[in-house]
Amino acid sequence: MELINIKHPSDAVSFRQAVMTGLGRDQGLFFPRSFDVLPDVDGLLELDFVARSTAVLQHLIGDEIESAVLERMVASAFDFPIEVRRLDPRVSALELFHGPSLAFKDFGARFMARCLAEFNDGGPMTILTATSGDTGAAVAHAYHGQPGIDVVVLYPRGRISPLQEKLFCTLGGNVRTVAVDADFDTCQSLVKQSFDDESLRRDLGLNSANSINIARLVAQVCYYFEAAAAVETPEDLVYSVPSGNFGNITAGLIARAIGLPCRRFVAATNANDTVPRFLSTGRWQPEPTRATITNAMDISVPNNFARVIELGERHGLPLEDLLYSVSISDRKTRDAMHVLWQSGYLADPHSALGWLALQESLEHGEEGVFLCTAHPAKFLEVIEETLEIDVPLPPALEAVRHKEVLSVTIPGDFQALHEVLRNPSSQA
Ligand SMILES: *Cc1c(COP(=O)(O)O)cnc(C)c1O
Image (cartoon, rainbow, N blue to C red):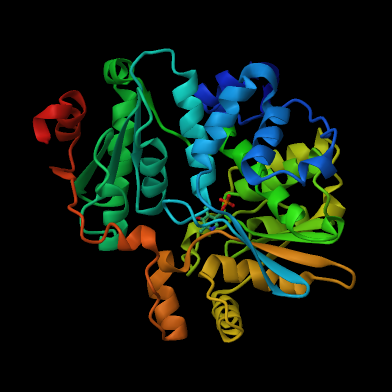
């Protein structure tokens, strides 16, 4: 796979280089130079999930990873179920939240972890990240048990929910969690200071496991083919994607570029509506970020949108016909949760928002699928206050609720973190 830096198209790198460096010159995103169409889509749709995903990734990545190795990476990264649930004759839910951190980000984070383990040349490698909850869980689980990689996750002590803390602070092994007596911004600035410390960075092989990494994106292409495999006329499908940073929808458009049969895509946002406004007015005018009940999508400057533009301009995808974007208010999202619940389906707020955008957009002759990006139990509080019901805990949370939290606590200063990073054993 040959990738270019979108900001400097003459900078070309391999998949391995793009995964290891994350971002190119001037913070430019890497993106494939070209896409080939899959040779046998019908045959692909007959396979099971791991075999199909291996074929999709082999097609995208090419010969940089041997097929037996790739198959092993995919089987161990995607070792949890993915479900397509039909809600009515025209609409299905694509449930992507059955992984260890109960959100679709498990797909990208887990495949990227296996890429880093595969590409590591034997030197030290430490994934250092700060979290306000969700990302930390996905990253910690993704790298847990990966040979040659240490993980350090910082979070603000007492400011994440106790269940969230149990989800990623009870793993042990190569995953260390640090409760910082400060807020999330301080955690982030501690991470930044660590990356600025040249000798620390080199000695520990610091890496950020960044969310814009190309490895995450290609992994997410795979599950679009699951919906296509589950319905009778995949060419009529409209995919609705709850969007924040626009990585998920970019993956869908890549799937289309390599031959996914479908009609079109709906990018559903919350009140942070930079993209829907851009698509209707042609002007890119981000406003200050607003807090909503779909907080994983509270982003007003979506990083991945440059890749969507690239798919239109360089790769010739007809975005005017293929991509529609709409903003949904909190009030309408809560109404959608009610309607779904009354029909017997419990959806988290992000998934409900995607469902409503689909419902409003679906035309005669089309069939729809909405991506369910998080397990309802991840957004307990919003669900309980909206629907006034108790949400049952899934096995992943039930299993950890009585485990011991293994985190060390430090004050919010760099010296303390430096000590933890340099002396892993001094604070067991
Ligand atoms: C990250 C996230 C999204 C948004 O996905 P993007 O790829 O950033 O557009 C939607 N829902 C949930 C639950 C998420 O965690």
